[in-house]
Image (cartoon, rainbow, N blue to C red; front, side):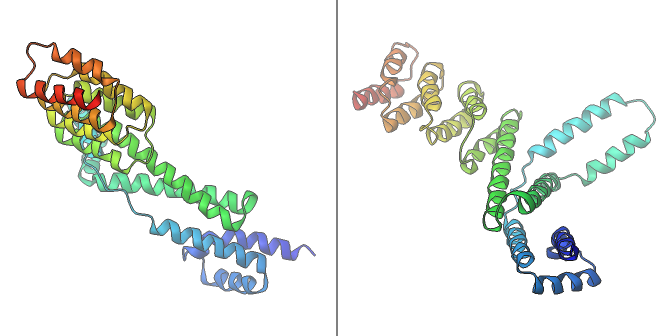
Length: 278
């Protein structure tokens, strides 16, 4: 009497190997015979197959040079500590790893780990909690969240890079992040106010302007007016304030006009901005 439940349990355990073509032929034949006879297991198998197909169609995140830069720095640090010493087995291993390591490999590895985690969680939901129709959607939502978190980590890491080109690349990740957290907002505002490269500040300002629905971003942009010394950034900020119709900026713009060293063209831009906001 217990033969059928045992068979169903065995089938459920084999479904992942079945959809990934890793199940031995003998076991596959037995499983497929059971699926034809058991509607419940057949429905479960269809749900697992749908989830597997959705996961296989997800795009692989575009690799960045950030991982290579950080890994290179780590290896260089290690190399300094062993200068003058005979090359050890560990040093040889690190050299070989350095040759193999690429940003593509790093992010594919991270992405694969995310997929494995989702697969494990998906198995739990399939067997214990969710209905087949909602389980795979929940897993896709979770995976999407994980990818968003990875992009935010890449953004934060890239903003600390000494190369301006890498900081510009990091700011561009905001295009792919649906909702930024407070740490990302703070990092972007810090970059806007303190980065030594004017182009990085201008691109950061553009990215923040697109996030202006966030009240912390708006407040940060208003406060940033008094912290800018570049005529290009001052002018761009004035344009952003007009575009956002941010009337709180009027006081800060007027304070900027009191600066005797203010560029003449910027002064005219700010005066016009104040009129447009009044």
